[in-house]
Structures are given as C-alpha cells and as structure tokens.
Amino acid sequence: MAVSRVLILYTGGTIGMVPVDPDDPDGTRRPGSKDDVLRYVPGIGLRDGIEWELLSDASLPPIDSSGITPVEWLKIAGIIRREYQAWDGFVILHGTDTMAYTASALSFLFENLGKPVVLTGSQTPLFHERTDGRLNLIHSLRIAGHRATGLPPLPEVVICFGKRVVRGNRARKMSATDSDAFDSPNLRPLGAIETDVFLDRSLLLPVPAASFHTHSAMSNGVVDITIVPGLPPSTLEILLAGPAIQGAILRTFGQGNFPPNPELLAVISRAADRGTILLNVTQCPRGAVNMNQYEAGRILADRGVVSAGDMTPEAAYTKLSWLLATFPSTARNLVSRNLRGELSPP
Ligand code: ASP
Image (tube, rainbow, N blue to C red; front, side, top):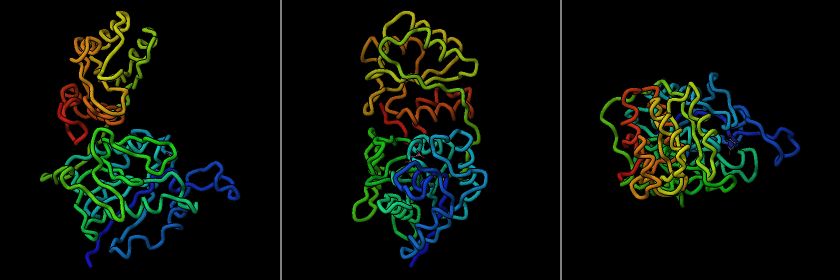
C-alpha cells in the first residue's frame, strides 16, 4: 500500500476548542491545546496509509481566528516553506470566521505551489459528541495524502468543509452555524464530499514547473469600505485619507455602481490623485463588476477605480495587501489580472 505523509498545522478555531466551564459543553469556548486536538483523533487516516503529524508551532499559539492578522499569515506561509520538502501535503486547522481570508492570503503568498494545502475546521469542536470536525479532518487528510488515496495531487490552497471542496481564494463563509459553512459562489466547487471525496480534475490549477517559494510581506494599508445609501462624504473622506492608506476596497452596489453624489465622487478623485489604488468589489455574493453597464459604474472607472471582476471581498483585500507590499510599482495592473485562479475572464 502506498504511504503518504501529511503535516497538520493547528492554528486554533472551534475544531480544537474546549469549554471554559468543563461541565457546560455548549457554553462559551476557548482555544484548546495541541493535546486537546490529539485526544480526539487517534489513528485517523492510518488505515488509508496516511502518516501524519500534528504541529502547533511556538510562534503561532492557537487562537480564535477572529484575531488573525497578516503577521500570522506570513508565519503560516513560513512554516509551510520550512516543511515543504518533507511532506506530500498540508492540512491547516483554522477557525471558520476568517478561514476564507487566510486561504486567500496563502494562495497569493505561495508562488508555484505544487502540493495540496487544505484548510479545515468545524462548527462544533472535536470534544463534542456532535462534532463535524472529525469528518472534516478525515476528508482533508484524504486530499492532502493523495499519494496514498489516489486523489489528484491538487496544487493549490483549498477549503474542505462539510460537503464541499472549494478553491481557497474563491471561498466565502456562507453560514455562521451550518456544517456546510463554505461555498464558492462564483466558481463551481472543486470537489464534493459524498460517500468519499471526489475532485473535479477539469477545474484544478495546473501543477507548476518552477520551484516553490513564498512571498514575505503584506501591507496593512488597505481599507475595506462598504458603500451604503446616504454615506456621508465626510465619512468616506476619513476612511480614505488616513496617512497609512495605500489601497481601498470599495464594496459597491450590483455590477459596481456608486452613488452619483458629486461630493462623494470628489473624495474618490482626491484619493485616486494621491495614488491610492481603489478596487471596485460588488456587494452581491454572486456575479461580477462591470463598470460599463451603468453610468453609476462609469463614474468610478472615469476616476481610475479598478474593477475586481468576480473576486470575493476576501480575495480582493488579501490580494491588494500582498501586491502593495510585494510589487508596489505594478500592483495597479496586477490586481485585475488572474494570478491564482481567483478571477474569471470578463
Ligand atoms: N470563532 C471561531 C473561530 O473562527 C469560529 C469557528 O472556528 O468556527 O476561531
């Protein structure tokens, strides 16, 4: 039987959480330790030929993922780079709240990724008898341990959760409680979990020929702004005029439409003149920005706002943060190019 070696990196999240009051399993939870995870998963995957190790890195103590920042993304990327040659694939245990951000950020920080990096977690912790974490971990291990399971060697960052496997930089958390918490509204799922894990080879990214490396910087000068009816120009000005602001996500209406208020538009023009990269992302969960469809979109294009196409807000935010720190002089052009399967052709 073929054997596959998988590294599981534990970063926190519900999957490894324990109750603050041990007598109240449904009460408030806090991140547990590596041992709290290990206690509930002895021997999983071994019958499939998957040899795994669970790593909780000292530089990355388990957290509720609502506390994640670009600093942790860079640390995770650094650990995968350090361990890359030794394993066939990687599973990252992560909280669901910001999993789509982390999956997107990692997809950009990894250059020429040739092995599976599978993020998973759960809505109910491993210690709980109704946990969804055990199956999510087993299915993720099957993907990462492709050498043993015969699944395609998926060379990308994915989220495996509930009934779906979705591209990481296309993923969105769709439900705060449902065990099928993730979907990729603008791209068919890469795979389905039924009696086993099925992956659609026709959707997977090609295995890169060049060697793997990671990028090591992300800007925290990107602001994410939801446009609402009646947004005061002074509020938009405050959000865009901060000295550290290099880029902004504008979450606009429909196909990328913006209120035709001259004062709001003057704020946009001033930001563009300062060199801020303004990225137009639709508020709709499905569909893409097309600033040529309506005058209400054209007014942004005319002021130098760039279309995010059908990128998710999570992909747009992490991509712009990565580009501004890594390729500052070409970030404006690169942000609207498909770099990691995050964007469909117009
Ligand atoms: N608050 C938790 C977290 O993101 C939620 C979860 O993991 O489902 O860490």
